[in-house]
Amino acid sequence: MDQTDLPDEKFSPHLQLYLLFFIILSFYFPKVMEASTLATPAATVIIPLSPSGIDVVVGGLFQADYRYYTESERPDNRFMIRRAQVELTSQIRPWLKVNLEYEFKDDTIDHLQDTFAEISFGSHAARIGHFKKPFGLEQQNPDAGICFAERSMGEYLSSGRDVGLMLHGAFSKNRLHYAAGLFNADGDNVSNRSDGRDDPELVGRLVLAPFADSSNEYLRYLQFGGSGSFARINLSTLDVKVKTTGMVDTSRNIYVLSNNTKFGVLQAADTRWRLGAEAAWTCRSMAFQGEYIRLTYTDLKPVGNPAMNADFKSWYVNALYFFTGETLSFSRGTLQPIVPHQPFDPATGGFGAWGIAIRYARFLGDRQWINPAAFVSVKKADAVSLAVNWVLNPMHKMILDYTYTDLSDPIRVRVHPDGAIDYIDKENVVTIRYAIDF
Image (tube, rainbow, N blue to C red; front, side, top):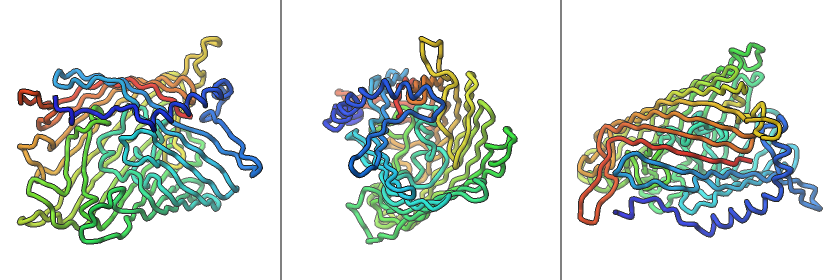
């Protein structure tokens, strides 16, 4: 087997440190579990810093998965740590908040997640640091509000996190939400500056919720939005890698485009555009959302060949229903975590919240940048996901996710010692997740 095709699942010192922290924090769990039975979004642990009088709220995210593939070409069934994060938040002044979030997994690009200072003025705020760029609905939804094992394939066309400055807030009684900022356009890779461009990337998102202050439960959480980004790029920022649900945390992809192309090394690149459109609605225990994302690189010029654009598209629609009656809602443009009516407690007969989610997603890759002999990129991928969610309490959740992905072209998945090669043109993956989000 080609070992380079396998995920890196080493039990790193960073992860050991996180688990030690998690064990220490478990001494607080009796109080946390008691608090989680209240009708609050999540339980919290607060550490006072004396003599400053400042309190620090301790949070974190731990996700442990088991992933199973039905294809015989994929001997990748395994347990894995999907996320292991610690978050510290302090409201230093009524108008000043500081947030520090760290990812302990070694195989992540950004160990610093949402790490920023934020100054508030009324319903508006200015944020500076390292955090999610304001693009798209699915990207902005918190992990506690995601009811599938992974976000859709469009996540890999979105903006992700970076260092920058952002203004965000709301107008007209929360009917209009906005976020816009300037960010580094080159992410964490600054090794190749090419033509030396260092202009920031402009990113923005606008969400209209026309009935946000209405008492009509059928219209209150209806919203529409759009996002966009623009940057003049260096070649080092050209790194498109699109993954399916079963390829997350592995070296496999369904589309790859970098500054080494099928035509040779690129000499120049001009701009990068992203455009997104979204719509969402919740009513009582139901939620629906859909999104379209387009990513375009302009004037990519290989050595000895004319410049061409590279264009990628993705869209999805999904539906969510909690048959235990929990109310689903959007706040400031994002889906809020689920709070069970009856948190899981065998002593009182509580069984938590139970819901089911379904999603259809499509990815369209640029055909002219595919090298058919490489077997690393596809023209199209269609994915259907079905997920059962069990929210034990605001802090604990389990997900059983099945995702089928149909690929338009075969993808190489492993090379045998004798030189034989295995390919797949579909993926069936079952993910079982236990998550603690506090």
